[in-house]
Amino acid sequence: MAEDGTDRFYRIIEEGLCIGCGLCQAVAGEHRIRMTKTDAGDLRPVAFGPLDDALVDRIYDVCPGTRVEGLPACATEDDTKIDNVWGPWRRMVRAWAGDPEIRHEGSTGGVLTALAQYLLRSGRVSFILHAKASVTEPTFGERHLSFTEAEVLEGVGSRYGPTAPLIDINDVLDRAEPFAFIGKPCDIAALRNFSRHDVRVNELVAYWLTPVCGGFMPGDGMSGFLDRSHIAADSITSFRYRGRGCPGPTRIEHGDDVTEMHYLDLWGEDASMWTLPWRCKICPDGIGEAADIAASDTWIGGSPNRIESETDLGTNALVARTVRGQELIEAAARDGALTFEYDVTPDDMSMYQPHQMRKKYAAWSRFQGLAELDRLVPETTGLRLSALAGELTDDMTQYQVDGTKRRVAEGKASEPRPSHGTENS
Ligand SMILES: Cc1cc2nc3c(=O)[nH]c(=O)nc-3n(C[C@H](O)[C@H](O)[C@H](O)COP(=O)(O)OP(=O)(O)OC[C@H]3O[C@@H](n4cnc5c(N)ncnc54)[C@H](O)[C@@H]3O)c2cc1C
Ligand code: SF4
Ligand code: SF4
Image (tube, protein in one colour):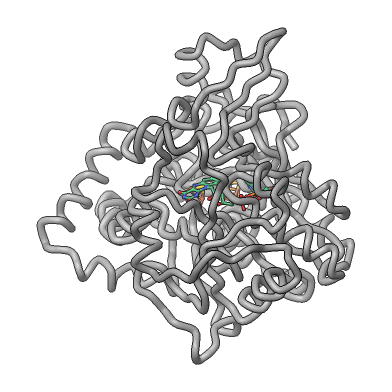
């Protein structure tokens, strides 16, 4: 029997490709699709009534679970360098926020906050679309609009919980004012996809900024962490993942208590211990290829060191991919919003982010494993995935293909269809 539109829509979620960005709710309207907190503690879209094929085709075209593209050709100049792993770049530089307080508050060195404030202060944009801690679900993020520098600061820090920044993108575009978007690379991919359906995106999104992203914490990861820490989820009133130093303590206010611990107690000692959604494990672009600027940490090996964390003031690596991005960081440095330390190279980035490099090399083979099982495979363009896979030995490729098929067989790449639970915005 042919799959109906609703079943086809839910395949994205059931095959573990949804990251909960919220765009499908905006595309369908909340009377037909609504973001919902699932029993497992994730943020997923739930359909109300049958979904027709035309709508589902449109969702497949914009969803970052099913489509991820690199930097649009119109944003790539002839003299833009393309690194096979790190993608398009014009300048890579170690940097931090010029204001020591912003540097301290920031997730790493506060550069995204400093740039967002600079964009407002210099009149380049009217507001920033980004994320802050959710009021109703303290471990989640929620979409945040900042019109002032103080509002930008409210969103400082990394939100490692479910976050749907695009949930009401139509309303944001209806403002008809230029803005900057800060979102995870997959959120950037989603909005870039949506630009093919709504011309206002390219007219109004003046700057695209992203953190380099190794993945976020799914509901089961968070509940396991809270159990281990003897913290009741329903007693939490505030959850700060990092910041106030680099990485700064994970700080949880719950009941009358405050618990602080190291970032490594939340995530584990290295990338192999991170609990991630399936979509993040096969992510073809955690490095924000479609953004003007990507900002990362600079810990050698990808994880902080407990002793060095006590004195680490925070240093980002900034990857300016476009002329616009390069002009912005250089103007911000000239005007004191950023401090540059020294320029770096793609090899330095791979030293800071070995997990990103490994994932980039493995993505194509992992997609092959999915294809061999007739699973949905994200469509990708401009990410050089097959060229990177071509550098692997046959044994390494087969290892990735087999590993993916084994995880699918074990159910690690599947989710139950979400039911109507707690709506979340
Ligand atoms: C999910 C996630 C995974 C990450 N994985 C890596 C990694 O693999 N390697 C690495 O080097 N660094 C990673 N980071 C951290 C990232 O490097 C830092 O956020 C980045 O260096 C920017 O630091 P900053 O001090 O400039 O940020 P800040 O100045 O603190 O600014 C952060 C900005 O990002 C926005 N933001 C935070 N979380 C979200 C979110 N979930 N959705 C939308 N906007 C958000 C905030 O609103 C704020 O404007 C990750 C961050 C996140 C959120
Ligand atoms: S990734 Fe975004 S657009 Fe795709 S199904 Fe999930 S919430 Fe909807
Ligand atoms: S790893 Fe990829 S899919 Fe996961 S949150 Fe980051 S950018 Fe999105």
